[in-house]
Length: 554
Image (tube, rainbow, N blue to C red):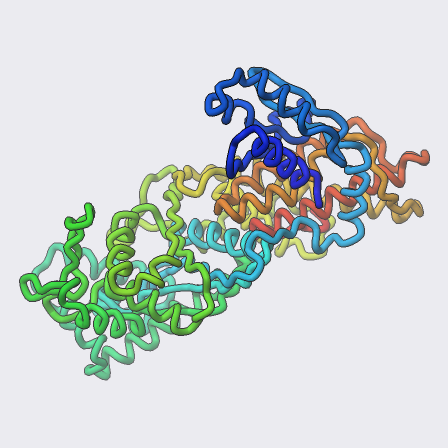
C-alpha cells in the first residue's frame, strides 16, 4: 500500500472515531514542496460539524493518528491544514520502482474491469477537417489514454455525418463549380458555395433538398457516383491526419447507418415524439429544456434522431460497455441535454452510461471560423505551417529523421496548448508560444526529455550505470506524485493535471541540471543518473498520456 492510501485510511479511522460517519478526507499536494508531500483540509472541513476550533481539531487528529509507515513528520499549517512529510526510504523505493519497470510506471486501477467507449473528433465527410477537430481529437485521445492507463478496456470511436443537408450542399457546390471529382482540399470550397446558396437562394434550397432526399434513397446514379467518390476521398484524407496525430480508431459510426435506427425509434414512441406540423418533435420544455425536431416534415431523421440511433448502435455492438463518453464542442451542450433526456425516456439504461465532455473553441488571431462561409483554417494547414516553422529549429538537430522530428514538434505544440488548461475553456492559439523551448510548451517538455537521453548516453559512454538510491532532491519528491496525478486526471477527465505536473517536473529537473554536474566521477554519479533515468521515464510516460511523442534527440 502506498503512503497516500495509508494516510487516507488513518484519517478516515480517526474521523470516524470522532463521530464523522463516511468521512472521505481529500489529500492534495501542497503548493510548495517545503510544506510537505501531502496535505489535507479535513480539520477545516469537519470542524463546524464537530463544534471545534479547526486548529485544535487538527492537533487532536494528529495525536490520534500516531505513527504512519512511510511518514516522517506531520505538522499543522495556517488555520488548520495538516501537512505530511514522507520518509526518505519512500523515495528510495520510488526510484527503484521506476527503474525496475519503466513501462508500468504511472499506471493506475481506477477503471479496472470497465469497458469505456470514447467518441471523439467526428469530422464530416465533404467538409474540411478544421482546427476545431484538432481540439476534439487531442482531448479525446488524451482521455482515452488516461482511462486506458487507469486499467479500462478502451474503445476509440469516431462518428461522422456522411448524409444530411451538409452533404447535399457540398455535392450541389461540386456540380456548380465543376469539381467532379473533387479533391479533399476542395470540399470546403464546394460546401461553402452550397451552404451560402441554401441560405440565400430559394431555388438552390429546393435543389439541395432534392439532392438530400436522393442521397438517402440512392435513386440517382450520377449523384451516387459523386457521393461515393467524394465520401472515400474525405475519409482517406482524414486517415492521413489521424496518422500524424497518433490516433487509431477502433470503430467508425456513420449517420447513414444511425439515421434509419433513430427514425424507427422515434416513430415507435409517438407519446414521446408527437407530431407537429408534419414533423416529429420532442417537447423539451416539459423538462426545463427546449423543443427539438427529431424527424423533419420531409420524413428524414435529424441530427437528434441520428444521435439516438448512434447510442443504440453503440450498445448493440458493444453490450459490455460500462461508460459511453462523447467529446464535442461546448456549442452543442443544450442540444445534447435534450437528446439525453429523450434517451432517458426511450432507453434509460443507455442514458445512464452516457457522459458528455464539452470543450471550448480553438481560435486563431483572425477570430471564429465558419465552414459555411469558407473562412476555415484546416487542421492539416495548421500542422503544415507549424512543421515548417519547426524545421528552422531542427537544422542542427542530432535526430536521425529531421522531417519526423519537425512534425512531432508541431503536433506537440498544438496538443500542449489545447491540454494546458481546462477542456471547457476557449484557446487563442499563439504559434510563437506553442513552439517555444523556454517552458510552458510541448516542445519544452520534448527538449527536456531529449536532454535526459543525452545525459544517459554520455554516462553509458563513461561506463556509469544508474543506482536506484534517493539523493533527497525536490525532483524525487515530484516524481512520486506522477501515478496519483495520472489517476486523478483519468477520474476527473482532466488532462491539464498531467500537463501542469510535467511542466513543473521539467522545470525542477532543469533547475537541478543547471547547478549540478551529473557524470562527475564521484560516488554520487550513479545515484544522480538514476534520478535522470526516472525523470526520463516519467516524462516519456506522461507525454504519452497527452498523445505527444518524446523524442530521443532534438
